[in-house]
Image 1: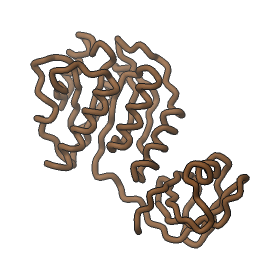
Image 2 (image 1 turned 180 degrees about the vertical axis):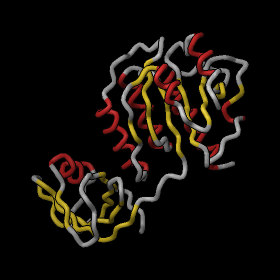
Image 3 (image 1 turned 60 degrees about the vertical axis):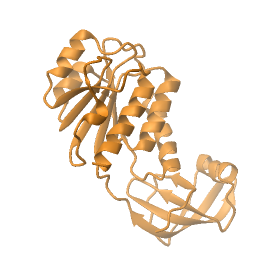
Image 4 (image 1 turned 180 degrees about the horizontal axis):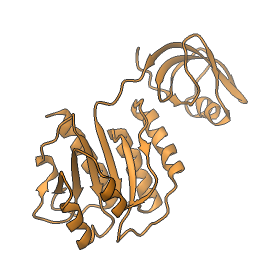
Length: 239
């Protein structure tokens, strides 16, 4: 199936030959953002499949599209969870957007000792992630988990490799760590000001954990999340 640049995520079932109707928000997006006309083709996808669809009606109160060709989504070959301390809304949304584009498969917010923002709007972050998936040609949406404490995180960790990024200068560079596509990988990003001394001890004592540095410069949390995610993806697909 040929890839089409304009894509819309919907929750409806998708089956070739059927016609689907879009709600007001999606219709507005199709008409006023994508500027689609009757006869144009776009891609519709949900969490199971992706279909090429032809616009058959672009009425303001609800567009209709005929499903032409459908294909089941391929399962992601990698499994990478980004564990992060909630930060301010705008930088946190930036991090989620970019890490979705990069390929993070799940997001886990974690309450740490130095976390400043203890509120998180998961529904808003999911929306940001859907838009990033539409833009980046991604078909499998990342999973979003509820906020947990770092103690809960440590108790429930079951990844093959855990990478925690700290400001310690004596840690290995993240791109020097051996990673495999077959491993489940957890990337842990601390809050502004880094992990507390006790947290560093606890993280260092965990099975399969590896402390890393992202370089000599001090990065903001959202930048660290994007850089670490990119380097891990590059490592496992270019091993």
